[in-house]
Image (cartoon, rainbow, N blue to C red):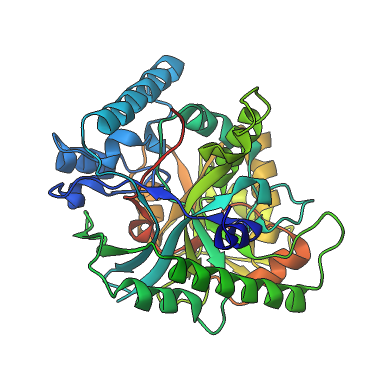
Length: 427
């Protein structure tokens, strides 16, 4: 392993073999939003299906979560089988251009933000753990629900391809590293540029494929590692400095970890530690990027009434509730402390939902909450959560571990990462 690759490996990162569609592919149909978005909006996904009909598309390579329960176990297994067959056919029938060993500098724009910058690379799953008691190099920002992992594991296990929607954050207050890499990347023509469907803006990507660029990346991450030690203290034995925080896709990264931990126990020869499954393709972004907005993730509880929920929440003095006079089934939430309100809210909701055999969903955007509580054929109550500040996220996670699950979102649903780049995984 060369010196630069050793330095990057020590930082839990690597340079992937990127797969992109052949030139001439309609990327506006190829790129599709993350599978865990619009989980209560079949009309959105039906429109995506209509837009991409007959064209090569990431829609055919993913399992939108809204369809996970369709057809029971038989329906799920059939869909997974079809996805893997499509992955194999795309690989074998010339849909992809030859792989390119590079990072990808990414710029995303939309109606709210003129530019959000990111960097596609791979992270080492042996340097990540979502369990709250661990302090690895790559840490979850939110709680992970083990019960949500099995269907995702079924999808990833043995899959020929990997498509990322995981966003990893760095704490670069001066915002130097990714913009510098962007300047280097943009000295050549972009790998791709395309509008994104359903009014989600546009995205462009440039290759970072030189040792010069990779050396700048390694040096920048090493400086951030040194800063982490200064800010949060030297790690205890068995722990690592806190370099990366999982901003979006906690459960997807936990799924990748579970599949790797399972796979590496199987006999695989001397080179199993270098297997592609050890790594996960992610986009790294700086928490201080001006294009990143932290949004609350609201809650909708099905099968209950607002008065019952108000009684439950009233016992917690750190939670302030306001009933919305305009909407009978909406409760607005505020925090009476400096902590993010989900610290106090989530345990109450978990207990209430479990004891009353109810269901809960986590919703991006107030408009979608209003739609669900007014149009749903099931009785539903919406909880509108307050805005979330991103300052201090790293310090909070370093000190206290992950926040409760679904505590914040990086932007609205339609701003979420679109699948575009791919990487070989199994086979």
